[in-house]
Amino acid sequence: MTIIEDTPALVLSAPVNLRDLGGIPIAGGVLREGLAIRADDLAYVPVDVAEQLVTDGLTAIIDLRSPLEVAVTGRGALAEHPIAYHHLPLIADVSRSMEDGPSLSHEAMGRMYLRMVEVAAPQLVTALNVIAYTPGAAAFHCAAGRDRTGVLAAMLLLALGAADDDIVDDYARTGDNMVAIMQRTAPAMGAMWKALGFDASALEKSSSLLEGSMEVSMRILLDTLRERHGDPLSPLRAAGLSDDTVARLRARALAA
Image 1 (tube, helix red, strand yellow):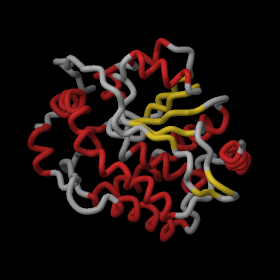
Image 2 (cartoon, one colour; image 1 turned 60 degrees about the horizontal axis):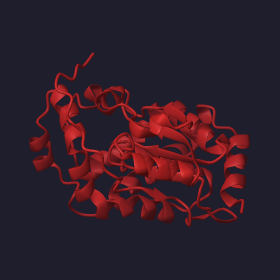
Image 3 (cartoon, helix red, strand yellow; image 1 turned 120 degrees about the vertical axis):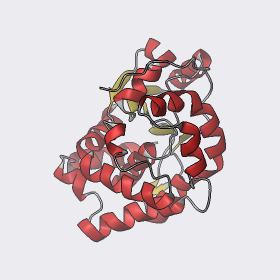
């Protein structure tokens, strides 16, 4: 078990990569606002931001971070509100995912996304059921709101009948926010990398994620899922995603 010896002093800050998925074309129309919100880390938002999210209709949080990341920050101000909390890590052990050393390129991210879908399909199915059945809006987040959050957003949009191009466009919107994301998450992520034996500054220097187009990663995921499975939702269907859940998601997504 990895131990974090020096818990960082987190500075509360508003998310810099939060957006409602409303407005994206889906089967039968356009995804309404107030169903699904994707975000960077919600664990250290200020009290006023937490209160506004709840006032605006938030009823469930889906936390996609690893147990180690949750140990760094806890749940924060949103834990003080009567909303459901679901911890569904898409990467349960970050150290095992880095056994061959971290590779921070768009192509490597795409391959990692594929592993998430095929290995963490049960967690993704649970997340889709939370979105389908929570009475208000569900917010899902990881650290940056890019990778694990992007995978869940893609699976949700596939279930809703969105086109691949629209899924890629939503994912790529995070690109403009990457510098702000890295600044906001640096204390928490630095503590995690240190606990795992990695130098955060060296990782940042070796990363090529700020170069080129983010679209590459999501294209790799969607294209490879179709090549391997035909139906890109096949791994989730095998893990229990039902037609009833998909139908409920679509009905809720289109409801006025």
